[in-house]
Image 1 (cartoon, rainbow, N blue to C red):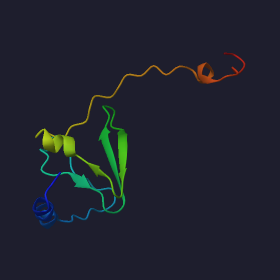
Image 2: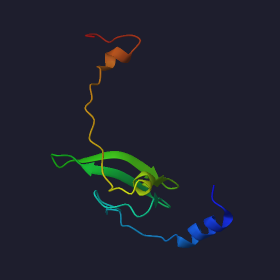
Image 3: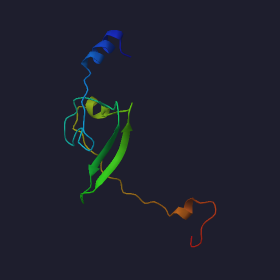
Image 4: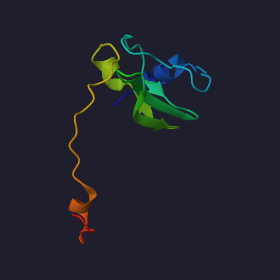
Length: 101
């Protein structure tokens, strides 16, 4: 837990950056120099797939934070590898299977 003087110092060091809708807040392979706290709006965390389509990983609403892992580990911001999935057909999850299952 931070002491009061540490909290005061952290608060004094805060600054606000405004971003236009649709603009990048940070990009892959940048070295993290801060956490990202969302004061207003909604932050999409996404990457681009090999075929050029956007892939959204998560979203961060006002009051949320992201990026602390990259900051604490002093590493480049990077997306994780997309998972390979094997979803079962919907009828395997239903109590009463539909026709054809």
